Image (tube, rainbow, N blue to C red; front, side):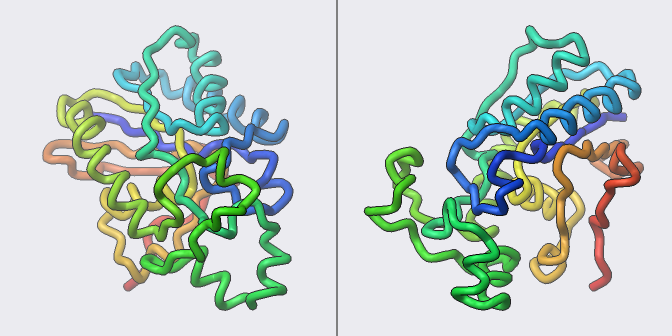
Length: 231
């Protein structure tokens, strides 16, 4: 038996402001810090001995993991930080308020940009106020683009630990988590549109032999979201 815990970072400053964050390195809101603390307590109650810790290169995910590690008394653990686990790049929508974008482009267009599998937002422009902070040749991403970086990283760096029947904790983002859930649960491109990942709520997935899923659950049942949807 091996355990994989996935957690979307706690509520960030821009989550509270309803802004598209993407690759901008925004920190946790105090609400997100509280969520991370609660997550740490829930994980600690499981009494799992972890063999690998992974996060993105963005501090809202890093700090979520750091808070959890402190509660687990594992603050000195080696943490693997990978850009491949970053949130998706929201292109020119980056930093904009979601309600204002809906007013400008319409609900359906914004829904396509946010939830569709293969539609990218407009690429970030050269005069965008955050382009220098992002510093990347990637200008925008769809969920499909995110899948293409998350899954190879998972297969190379995380899956081998799970295959050894060891335990892993990953702190990352809504869309990078959705990308990984597509692989683990074999979720279709159609149904992933409906999948929403709650902030700061650990998802425990237990694997048996041959990576067969034994069971799975969000540790905070009151804030759980549905993962699988009917075809």
